[in-house]
Image (tube, rainbow, N blue to C red; front, top):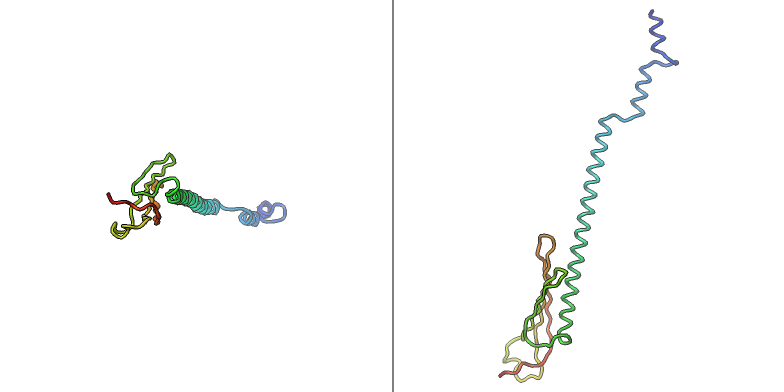
Length: 151
């Protein structure tokens, strides 16, 4: 009977315990698969977070560039589209920007008295909502214009 047992355990020329060790070396255990999936999910979540943050930053930068362009065009329009004289203008635009343009005399009025031209401070502020934050962009420059006449 002992001989029969030995034959049953050595099917096809090799012992059964050798077959089970070969099976362990060829496949992955359930723990290894779970660990690999956990590592993959952590890596993907970090990667997706980076991509999302990059897209958000790109949109924020695009809006800031748009605000800068609007402010520059407002300043460039003083003297051509708008007369160079003291005053304040503002407008809310449909794309979410709100701008203010101010033109004020530069320095004391006594300093400019008698001059054929006047010097003016032209400033513009552009504001917009960026997610939960209120953002703004401001520019200032000096312009020559007609002198203010005292009345």
